Length: 73
Length: 379
Image (tube, rainbow over all chains, first blue to last red; front, side):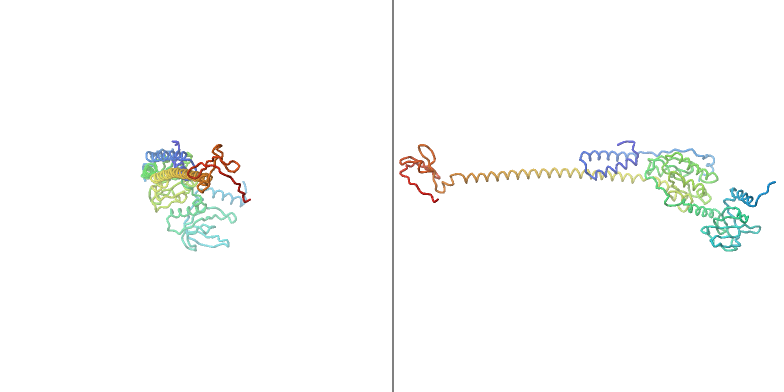
């Protein structure tokens, strides 16, 4: 699986792999290849959910620190 | 010295009056008198107090939240202009409230009605929230517990995102331009999937920036869908009405913004299970198919063999039926000329005194021809 896939893309791919398998009409070799891809994606999805750390950043605004210090709501 | 026409001066007055910011958006209290209604349904009246009076006209009766009659005390909102036909300065009323209602509540109701009429709250214009956002903008105060709560919840539920804080004051004079600036700063980036605009609970005065018309319009024009999470669940602000999604609290807004990780885990697990079941089923099916083929082949071979055996048997029987042994058993004999060895089938082949061999079913014996006599056939 491509590591660059977003989580959403990975989940979509996993869903479509599952549906293709269920639809049938392919050789056992093709099915096994898809199955391997699918389980690899599932593993990466699990890993991402469990190891990701929230990223925090900030945009520049007109906010001034001084103005806020007197009102921490 | 220039001489003006009356129309020029009333027009000039109108320009002055309508360019004044205070007169364009004003609340006036007074007592209703000279109330009349035109055939078109417009209300004309005078607002007066001890010292003075002002002509008023109300074109839109939907904005009445009070039963109009002469002598009642009201607070009217509208703009001041001049009716050039009569030269009268008057208040063009767009909302009337009974006195005694707080001015903030009146302003809230007025703005809510106005923006609703403009379509800012239309359900059809609410945009769906992205199912899997990658970048979430947060418009709130950087110091408060609100940001902390939002960060915690999102980190726990779905840590795959980047939170982009657009810091602003959320109450006081600077909050209105601050919130608008923060929204614009996030939208200018062009990569924000959804924006949470949040503030903790407080009085109507504390939350006032979220009831501001300019803030409402900034939310309306935001490129990214906006989730409002302002105050407690009993507080409703104009921002809540115009936002694409209203959350009762800042924490609830955070929950609405991201999917739940544990549900996703379950979903992924379900896909894996479905894949395993499908593949195992297919393998079992293949095995079954191989078994079936083997059965078919072995049955066919057996059939082929038994058909061959049948045939051999049939040929054998046929052969037996053609063999002379059967005939001999029925009492016929095979006669052979002893000297030449040829089979004797006609009397002309033998003469008296010739030796012949006679074969019967269980053996043969020698014999001598003593005479011959022709027998006529029946034909």
